[in-house]
Every structure is written in C-alpha cells, then in structure tokens.
Amino acid sequence: MTTRPGTTPLPQRRQILLVEDSSQVRQVLARALEAENYAVHQAEHGQAGLALLKRITPDLILSDINMPRMNGIEFYKAVRQNPAWVPIPFVFLTANDSAEDIQAGRELGVEDYLTKPIEGDDLVRIVNARLLRVANVQVAQIGQAYLDTVTMLANAIEGRDPYTRGHVERVTAYALRMAEAMRWPPDHIRNLEFGARLHDIGKIIVPDQILKKAGPLSDEEWALMKQHPTAGAKIVGGIAHLQGTLPYILYHHEHWSGGGYPRGLTGQEIPIEGRVLALADVYDALTTVRPYHPARSPAEVGQFMTLKAGALFDPSLVPVFLDVMGLNNKKA
Ligand SMILES: [Fe+2]
Image 1 (cartoon, rainbow, N blue to C red):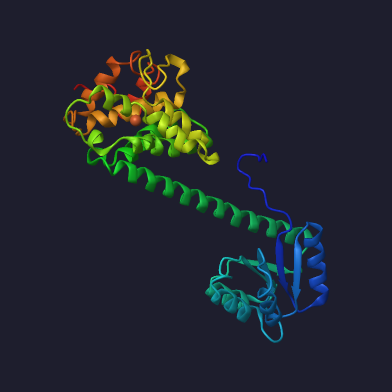
Image 2: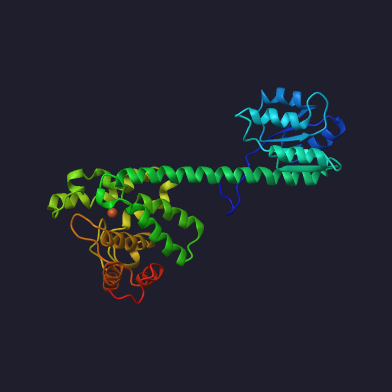
C-alpha cells in the first residue's frame, strides 16, 4: 500500500458511538457519518451508551450533555473510570447556551466540543480530524517504542565491550548531525537512526576474548571480526521494517580508495550511508579509550580525517563532518 508522505490512512468502517436523546438530531448526525462510511451505534442516554460499550469498542464517542437517566457528564466519568475505555476520544455535543456544562466538562479534562446545531459536513470534518490525530499519535508511539527496542538491543550487544560504552549513541548523534546538514529527507533520517544504532549488531558472533583483547588480533581472530557486517546484515535481513539499515550495517568499514571490508568497494560504489557512518564510527573510536590505543583529542582526530580524505573517507564528506563537529580550522 502506498501513502502520501505525512498522511496516515484510516482503516475502513470506523465505529462511532453516538449518545443523544433527541432521535431527530441523532438520525441527522448518524446519516452524515454513515455517508462517510462510519459505522454508527446509537444510544438515547448515558446508561444505554454504557450498555453498548460492553459489546463494542468504538473509535470515538460523540455525546450530548443534557439527557435523561444518565447525562453526558456522568456518562463521561463512567467511561473514563474503565481502563479499557480511557483511550477512546470523547467529543461533547453542546447547546450554544450551555457555558456551565462546558465548564464542568473542561474541569474533567474534556477537550472537544461541538456546538449544536451541527452541520453534517462540520461533524464529519471534525470526526475525521480527531481520528487522524489519534492515529498519528499511535503511529508516533509505536515508532518510539520500536526505536527504544532497537536501542536496547544495540546496548545489549555493545555492553559486552566495556570500552565502547556510549559508542552507539555517540555515533548515531554524529551521523545525524551530518544528515541534517545535508538536508536528508525524514525517511532517510529515520533509517539512519536505526542503522547507526544497529551497525555493529553482527559483533554478536565475535567471542568476548576477541572483543576485549588488548593486544593485536591474530589472523583468524581478525578474519572473524571482519565478518561482523555480513553477520549483522543476515540478522536484520529478514525484518521488513529494518531493510533501510542494511547499507549502514554492511558498508561502514569500506574505504574510499578500496581495501576495506566486507566487499572492498571503492568511491561512490560505497553507499552514502556507509560513507557517512564510517566518519562517525572512526571519529568516536579514536576519541575514546580503546584496549589498543589511548583517547586522542578531537582536533587531532580531525586532522587525521583530513589526511585520510580520499583514502579512507569520501573527500566530499570530510569537510561536512568537520563542520558539524566544529572542527574546522582547529589545530591539534
Ligand atoms: Fe563495525
């Protein structure tokens, strides 16, 4: 399914609970909503509304305030007392002269009011907008939960190596600065946030004694270490939502002039994601203490990167990196 950027499609046949004592008003509103493909469940007062809620979970509740048996305020209180019904958006239908009712509702936390008489078009527009807002909030919450889960996974992998604590977060932050400076579109930035966090996930195949080794690695150990990009790509490869992270995972150890791993690509053959991440990754590795070297100063590392532009790094990206890191014109 394709969607225009910035829009979230609403699933078909959203359910609306309409609580209103005037059958005439109820019919008019129900017809307007049904014409827009909403399924409308009608109740003539709060008590009947509560009875319906035991059978259906609507996407939105529209309720009058002045009704016999159970009025709208009492109905709202009862709805909000049930944890299962708390997330349902609630919109009051009020008469023009009911300032006291509106005040009572505000004190309970009600945000939405529609003033009667209500035109069908207005009702549909407001219901659509309210549901779209709810859907967008849900999408944002799911996205955040997803990112939190990936961060937890990345931290668990990184946590095995005490020398790289905070590495993933810093590398992500540095790479994000570059992407923002280059005005990458939001979907690319989103992939970067996941890709930068997961770039070393393949290190799960590298045993602790190799990860924590202070001396140089043997040929076999080094050969295993060099498999981490392809191992990471295999782990993530089957997950549809993480396809955009693959260029970060696979290509962050490629060198501009060749000789990197896993594929030994050169220049523009290396996807931009890998070229950007290589800068952030190497910068963080060199400015922090590792088993095999002390931490170097940012300015010293900036000079090293300038020296390696066109060898290790994309020469057009090195100035961008130095710029976003505030390292231009700094002496070591
Ligand atoms: Fe790596």
